[in-house]
Length: 336
Length: 210
Image (cartoon, rainbow over all chains, first blue to last red):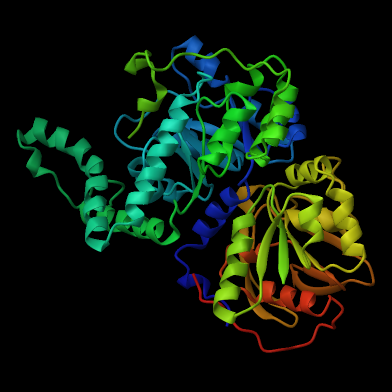
């Protein structure tokens, strides 16, 4: 008896999450030119992220970072045969539809760019193209999955060459997943309502201003026509999926500060499905060697002889201390 | 029996989970081995090359000296199943200079031939000896032509999407992404009988649906 497709939760979901699964165990590299994209492909990258500037340069330049020039993205799409992803600003639906029309394989709704919408992320369910989104905690990951993200990555702290924030976020996601695994149904329902609260918060502020009473929010429509009950119910479904699978129901990569082969291996050892490397490759002295070395280390993350060999003679990008960085300078604080 | 999955990159755990579910539900005698070295390759009775990025898997097979070793074992009779990227790797040739094929089945492949991710799709196929099967195509390749030794088991839009030549089975889609284990079970039969069995109609079970 074949599967009745109409009975599947969503054929689209299967395709979107399936695409992300094909990148597992791989390295996705930030590239800003056709030449860099070719280096990434020949080094064994599973996909490239087409960008105007790598995060370290975005950080340096300041100002507003937006979706890359479509012409540049197109050139990169024509230059390589591996999948091409590109970033949009948080909440910028129009940038997302533009990239979708351009035909990129996946969209990254990314805190590395300057957010466009201070209230909400994109409703990713309405897109045929899959999305990857950043997360610092399991709650953020769950909200993004509820909104339709087909892949999660830790936010880390992009452009720093400092892995501590990626580790912090991977640990937080893993620890949260453990708690969900051991929770009973009542606990899950409680978690679901807590995780749904931020969708309410944004409108409460307006109700406070308009009525002088935040309790007057219309609970029937909070996020793209979905009310509080609907949000809680959908988030509960995501939590049940996590409990059953013992992990996030979508692929979970590490990102934000990975600068060496050993950094990549560390994130894999923590349970990442793969890694994004932003500035770490093309801000290093020898991008070609660094790109290959990170791929080798990720594929053999517990073979320390290989990691030693591939790391020999490499020089990583200069790093930035994050512990004493002002909160306003941290890209990870963008989005909720 | 020990079933290997090339374990570098791609949807390795999805294949492993389907095999594990067959072991649980149908008491198939299966031990899954992730193949990343020649030693582990030598220990398995059959091999799956998963979906993933063919350029990446190709580079890693070369780098870790598995490229020729896989070809040697398959030529001496070990059954192999390639899904999507895996099929590109086992085929006779493909026009891309980024991936070299192992030439284990006489088929000419074109990578990403349906287009980009936006063109990915799910289609119900009629597979010889298996029946209706909902197939997930993700940035799938096209099989442009096959040699006379090759049996076409399923077609989509007039082109082969599932092919077999003795101990070599190739699919342009991803049976590992659904929970329907019939294709994996078919492959188990190929291994159980050393791969040299004619394709005959038989009763198939269906694993629980998603």
